[in-house]
Image (cartoon, rainbow, N blue to C red; front, side, top):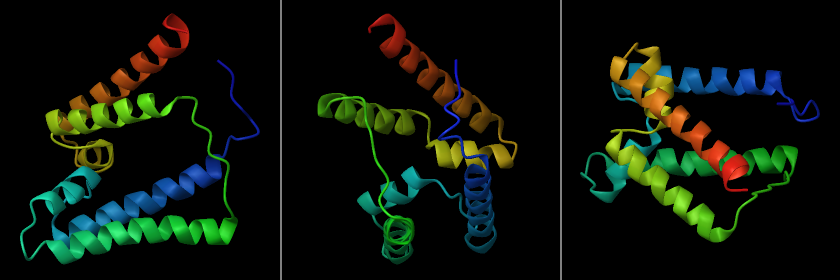
Length: 143
């Protein structure tokens, strides 16, 4: 394995992790809820009247943050080494995984692990293991 030193950005990754951690902590402290994206989006599919406004604001905030970043830094090159069929299949599998795992990587990996949740540890290990195995199979066995 080799590290792509041209794209290795430890300070940007550290800053992003700190911002995400602070946001997750603030969300729990202010709202008493876990900052799990699949749960926030899922709540919009079966909305309750008191939940809709903050969920929509959260999703719009995520989209606005990406737009503001693009305006500030400029567009970055996006390269996906897969066709649309594979991307759609991957998205569906992630969706099924979040339903079976009762949450997504942000809910379990960020919020659950920080609360020392054993269930989140198992879920995060399963997410990561499945990802490692999938990349290995696609790039080394099926290639």
